[in-house]
Length: 295
Image (cartoon, rainbow, N blue to C red; front, side):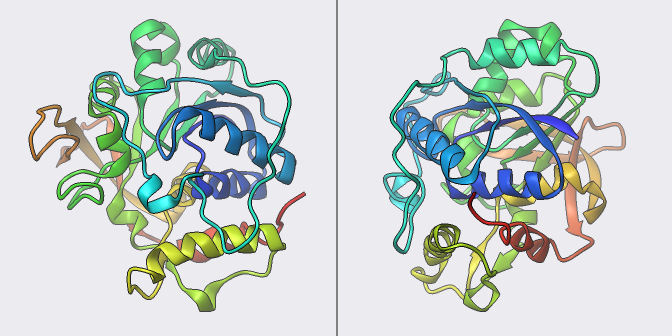
């Protein structure tokens, strides 16, 4: 499989990219978007991960803020870098910065022949800008798999999931664009959890970053931590591991307590597919992808 990844590059985004590599997928381009952290740190994470893990996909800097709302990050939860750790961090890389051409680069890639799947792991700002600026290219997306939204309670507000709340207007544009959308929401991701006893054998850097991610849950008195972006990557390469239902999706852009809430309605002709249950041990499949480790 050849695909494009749009990401705000926290640790679980990196984990998702490692899972794609484990399954033999070729990432032909990566567009970066502000979300987990401000865009400069997202870029630093992408450059550090490319060096530490030998990730070769071209990087393209995209939106540094949401379409309408003020910047919202997850640094209070994930740390200043968007990747907490028990000791080691990604290397700081000096050198050329990625070009600030994410929307144009994605549009150009979409106009090539063959299947054009896109995996979106953060706020949908870049994808919404693509829909607005290059609708012909956006219409060539053959699958858009997004980790975001919730068919239930939120995690960044009582009603809204973080990636949706970061840019509700962008999510609403994408939801209404008629694209073949698969939403890997909080409810399915929270069915993939791991604890200290599940840590895989891997290299020291990956072990420390994974430990820092696990500690988010442990420090809150939980038995473990849910897996998010890697579940979306798994849905991209192994859709048979999930039971899906067709849905209609709307996103609240009313700036009240519902802001960013995603509302799903089951309809046979719905363009959005929502996983309702895992059909395999999706947590183990995600954890196994980390046994390769750093380059």
